[in-house]
Image 1 (cartoon, helix red, strand yellow):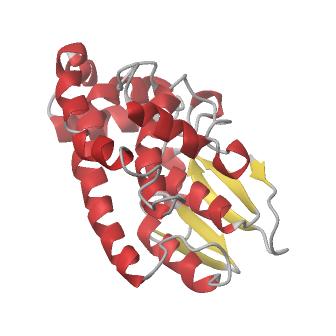
Image 2 (cartoon, helix red, strand yellow; image 1 turned 90 degrees about the vertical axis):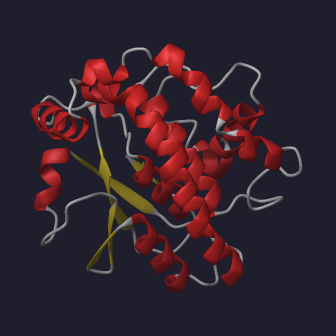
Length: 238
C-alpha cells in the first residue's frame, strides 16, 4: 500500500501490521497512518507479519515503526512527537503544548476504555484474520496472557456489549458540543480513537456500536479525512 500525498520528496516508510487479505488491523499503526496523512507527508507502508517484527532493526518488539532519513523510530507516541518536531510548518498534530499534554490523558483513556474492553470482544476474530504464519504465535501468546482459549474469551459478547457502549458516554457528551476532540478540526487524539475502531472493523463484523449512536457519524467524519484513508481500508462496514 502506498499513499501519495503532497509534500516533500522524502518518502517515509511505515512498518504496518498485516493480516489476511491485506487487512491492516493494528490500532496504533492506524494512529500513525493518520498522523502522516494529517501532516501531508508521502509515505509507504511495509506490510509486516507479527513474526517478522523482530527482523526490523535491533530489539524492536512492537509496531508501528517508521523509517525516516535512515533512522528507525518505534512507539506511536514517540513517532507522533518526532513528526511534530520534524515538520513544525505542517498541520499540527496536537495544536499547542497544553493540547499535547492532554493527549496523554486521551491515550490513557483509549487504552483503558477502548482497547481493554474491545480486545476480549474480538480476540478470536483477530486470530482468524492473522496470517497463517502468525496464528500459532498469536494463539499461544494471547491464551497465555488471558488464561483461556480465545473462543471462550470472545464467547458471550452479545451480553457484554452493553457495558462497553455505556462506557462511551464521555465521548458522546463531547460530540454534542463539537465535531472532534480537537474542536472544529481533528487532531492526533481523534486518531487515537479512530485507530481503536479501525482495529475492530478490520477483523470483525461484530457491531460494537448501536445503529443510532452519534459516535458512528464522528468516526465516519474521521474516516473521510485525508483522501478517505480510513474509509478505503480493507474492513467490514462500521
